Amino acid sequence: MQEKILILDFGSQYTQLIARRVRELNVYCEIFPYNKIPKIDDSIKGVILSGSPFSVRDKNALIPDLLNIKGIKPALGVCYGAQYLAHFYGGKVSPSDHREYGRANLKFIDNTNELFKDVSANTQVWMSHADTITKLPDNYKVIAGTDDVKFGAFKINDEETYGIQFHPEVYHTQEGKKIIKNFVVDICQAKQDWTPASFVTSTVSELKNKIGNDKVVLGLSGGVDSTVVATLLNKAIGKNLTCIFVDNGLLRKNEYSQVMASYKKMGFNVIGVDAKNKFLSDLKNVSEPETKRKIIGRNFIEVFDKEANKIQNVKWLAQGTIYPDVIESISVKGPSATIKSHHNVGGLPDVMKLQVIEPLKLLFKDEVRRVGKTLNISDDFLKRHPFPGPGLSIRIIGKITQEKISVLQEVDDIFISCLKENKLYDKVWQAGAILLPVQSVGVMGDERTYENVVALRAVSSTDGMTADWSHLPYEFLSNISNKIINNVKGVNRVVFDISSKPPATIEWE
Image (cartoon, rainbow, N blue to C red):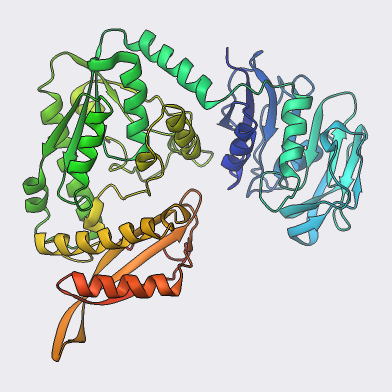
């Protein structure tokens, strides 16, 4: 039975970050909504209560059932979690005199307490709350505080229950990782055995036992998630796995042939499907971005279904679902209203009557990459920038034509190739080009031109939830602009997008 730390989610934007910090210690953890607590058994070594946008003073405050946790398992309340442990057990939480948000310093630390072992005096922490604890229950002891927050941290006497009113999981809390380690490793005594290598060993074994001699079908995208899934399944069941890679005509220049060659070199049993004409025919005269997405999603399902039905006795559909998708579907606020149908094979289980298998559903994106590294997958896949499921269709603003696709493929190829040549590709999280529905006046030789404008987009991010525009060198941008205009017929102007997310999005559509 895999040991774990249980994280109870009260809706904080930082809950997934708590999980990442725990897993960085090679300790396995799982996130559950505060009102859907699983059975508390010996595998659970400790519990962390997350922060929340809600208040414990609200009429409809979020109240977890801690009957089998508090005083039985080590527990750490973070922000809302700490205020809950104070407010509902005899203390008091009040509105702050002033909003406690941003950097603060712990002026008082009880270093004899295990939670703050080896934590430096005056260390910086990050506050983010409108309420504050104004009275602790009688059996609670203060173990840290700031000038403005007297009860910055506490411990309940005679039990391993702690509360902190700051966020140890965020970057701005300088020794947050140490505090989390003190709780998870020293107080909870959790084993640090959750590693990419152990995941590969256990997952391959589980896949062998679960699938046996059954056949599995998997849709490949060329991205890291589906490639790692294919590699794990290939190790477990070999030729009983059939992969399908669909060319929708909206991939990057030469991507289909290059990726197909790589997959065959990796030993995959892969079928390539040239469906360019079908996709482009159905997209003709379509400008609205959501309509484009729906057409591409529907066509993918139809093409995939047709090819999969040619394979006899298939019983399983493999998907590259990762942990953030799973968390979203059982979130505190309920299932997401929008499903990214282009990301996984949305709808196929109902159509094909197959059982679904999702080997990566417990992993975050960075963990998927580390597992891929353990599996010796090439950096060409592992370090690949994210690419939208609808492909270049949503980077061509307006109607799609083969001519526009060809122009954008050439521009994109120059941009990505030059990022790699100049050692900038790995410093950028995602990059691409957008073909605008705008024409501008230019001069080439002695002639006036009236041609297309392309926008270059490059962003820095960790997960795509927020992103800043990448500050690429001016000289690099100048060279790229010249190269594109000189080599791509039909383009006479290049602009660089310097919008961050929020308020802008990474893609234009």
